[in-house]
Length: 229
Length: 225
Image (tube, rainbow over all chains, first blue to last red; front, side, top):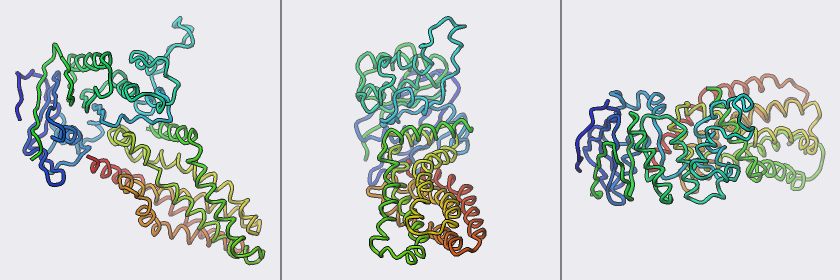
């Protein structure tokens, strides 16, 4: 396990100390220290089954750790769940999209109602103007799919609906588990831009991917997990 | 905070209404089981009137039991549950919202249809208000209890049998007081004592079940991977 390149001197956000996790008979990671400061991007790398997703989930208290403790801004996450969750955005393997609801309804259920629209007449726009959720979906190329149940969308399109949250929720720390799965090259570029922007504006991103993602202009570290022993 | 609650209720109602089979199942089951009794036991009015409270209450309990399995199943499969666990809204409030939506879709239709089935079973008219009140209090309590079991078994393969085993013993008090309230009313006695006890059970379930369910959901999600 190694960390490369220099650190930026941002505020320490998330810190995991001496983390260990077993899955059945295999030790996924042992006495692992992970930390991320504001303005930084951390990629978890390693072969399939090396514990990337487990580590990602453990860092936010979603999976259990056998040993170790995770701190958010210096305090254990389990002691301040609500504060921590309010600054956190997690996108897992399962996108959290319900097939019976359309993209707008799904987003409303996940992130809440969009801010009130300005009065269309006063703003000089037509009454068909989109709210913030619609705008984000439009940006992701789903403008013509807003009222179609998500079960009729492709895997990549469903992933795009889930990714729209990156635009809609202003959270400090993002944890993205394989965000590029099922996305085309335009989708990759969109995710890349979002990650760079988040890091550049004082946030931090931890992500896993097996694909190449060239992040320029931000501090990027790679944490290599070895195969489970 | 109440906004989060309303959001969950609205979402769940919308999802269920679009898949009609989901909320019709318990209702159809309830009607079929109740109508089987006159066929199996014989249509003698005196006999039917005597067993009516028990029949209606047992059928309602089984119909509700049938519906618990899908309380969290979809949300678990598509990852929504993980997002609820990580949301800044309290998980117990989300649970309360889901339970409310579930009652509206599976408990309420059953309550509304019960007077009709009561008449079918020769239950005296004086007992019908008590039947409605007891079923309203009772099905609410049942959904709250069922949510705990559903949360514990949602990650388990073929969890429905386990769910029934977990939940059934806890529902016995509801069944006893529910059917005895209706029996008392049918025989011309006051049912106030039983109904008060049922209201107390509902209050206790409302206070405890959302927290227990939330804790169970956290355990379920943690054991996922």
